[in-house]
Amino acid sequence: MSRPLNMFMRGKRVTMLQELLGRMGYPTQDQPGLFGASTRDGVKNFQKQRQLKPTGLVDDELLKLMQQGHVTASSKKKRKPKKAPSPIPVNQQQLDALIRLLIRKDLINEDELQVEMERPQPVRVTQPPLT
Image 1: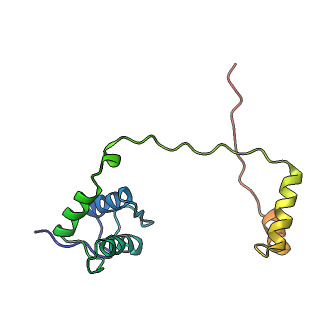
Image 2: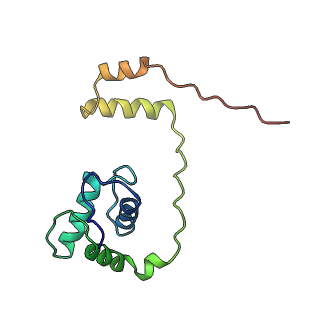
């Protein structure tokens, strides 16, 4: 029997647990291989869904249950990676309307907008096409 996985542990077993949680619909926000709060919450949610005591600890028995629970017909199929959405062309009038709306809804204020506009932006360097 191996040592139960819990908060602040690191390693390959934690990475495997995080991947397993993600495939089961409990994505984690923790650094890969680090058992943090997000991984613990995913484990607790799994435990609650299975009417188990939500301890957040992963022993061998729970790990086997998780491994059995994620093997379904849909997870056996190879899924195509999702394509990133292509950017929607926006004109200046639409941008101005969006900014007015954000200010009106108090999501940003004019001072924040001004500071952001004055902040230096990184320069994108592109090479000319080879001819």
